[in-house]
Length: 122
Length: 248
Length: 117
Image 1 (cartoon, each protein chain N blue to C red):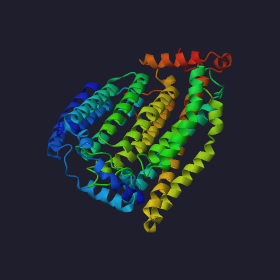
Image 2: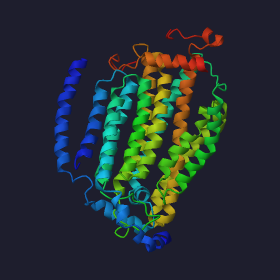
Image 3: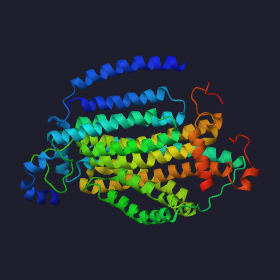
Image 4: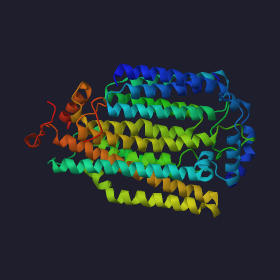
C-alpha cells in the first residue's frame, strides 16, 4: 500500500503524450497486424499435416499469440502463453511423436526421416 | 462415417456456428470501448487490497475459489498423465527394452549455452513467482519457466545430470504438498491480509505447476528415450533384441 | 475494427475444429484442439481490451482514474490460468494418444473401429 500512495506524486508525468502512443491509428494497425498474423498461423498449424512440422509451426503460433497478447496490454497472459505455447506444448508434442513413431508407418515420411536422423546423430 | 460426409456435416455446422457467432459478435460492446464494469470494480478492489498487480489480485484474491478449481484440474490432469505413461513404461520393460541414457554428442556451443542458461533461467523463474504480486508474473508463469528450465540440461546433452537433478518421488511429494497448501491457504484466507496471502498462494501455485511440468516432461522423456533405445539403432546390442514391429 | 478481433477469435476456433474433423492422426487432432482452445483466449482478451489503456499493474503508477485507463484484469486472470491448465490437459490427451498407439498399433482415428482392446 505504501508504494501505491508513493507513486501518486508523479502522476502528472503520465500525461497525454504517453497515452497517445497506446491509442490512435498506429496502435490499431498494430493490433490488426497481430490479429491477422495469429489467424494466419492458426490456419497454418491446422493445415500442416506432417506432425513434426506441425509442432514447429505450433511453436511459431505460440510466439505470435504471445505477441498479440502483449500488444493487447496483457503482459501476464503473454508471459504464460510464451512459456507454454513456444516451449512446453511443442516439446510435449515432439516427445509424444517420438514415443509413438513406431506406430505411424503409413504416409508420414517426415517423422520417420526425423527419427532416423536423430538416430545417426546420437 | 466417410470423410466426405464428415466434411459436409462439418461445413453445414460451421456455417451455422459462424452465422450465429457473427450475429453475437455484432451485439457485443465494440472492441476497445470504455465500458468495463467488472474491470473497474476489480481494479478498485485490487488497489484497496494493496496488490499492485491487479491480475494477481483477481486470480488469487477476488476469484481464488475459481483458481482453486483450476489447480485441482491441473493436479488431476498431471496425475492421470503420469499414471498412463507409467503403465506403458512397465509394459515396455516387460518386453525387454533396454534403458540406456548415455551422454549424447551435442555441439560444444549448445552444451555451453545450456549450462549457462540453466542458472539464469531458474533465477528468472523464482523471480517471476516471488515478484508476481507486484509486477507481471506469478505462480502460473513462473512455474512454467521453472518446470521447463531444468530441461535445458537435456538440450546440453546431459541426460544423467537431468535424472539426478530430478528425483521423481520428491517432485511427486512436492506437488501434492503444494496442492494441499493451496487448498489450506485458500480456505484459511478469509481472515488474512491480502498482501501476505497473494505471495503465499503464488508460491504454492508456482511449486505445483513447476513440479507438475517436471513430472509430465520426465515421463514423456522416459517414453521417447525408451522407444529410441529399443529402436533400430546403430548399436549392435539393440538390434539383437529387435522388435518385429519395427519399420524398416 | 470494432468487431474484427471477435471474428478473428471465431475463425481460430472454427479452423481448429475443422482440423479435428479432417485429422488422420490423433496427435494432430490434439494439437488442433489446442488451437481451438486458443481462440477463446483471443476472444477473452479482445473483450477486455480498452483503447489507450495500459496493463493493470500499479507498481509504478497510481490506479485509475489518476493513472489513466487499464485493461480488464478479470478476463486476463481467466485466460492466464486457462493457458497453463490447458497445457496440462493437452499433455493428458497426448498421454492417451501414446497409450492408444501402444495398444492398437495405430494413430489413425479412422482405423480405430471400436474401443474394445
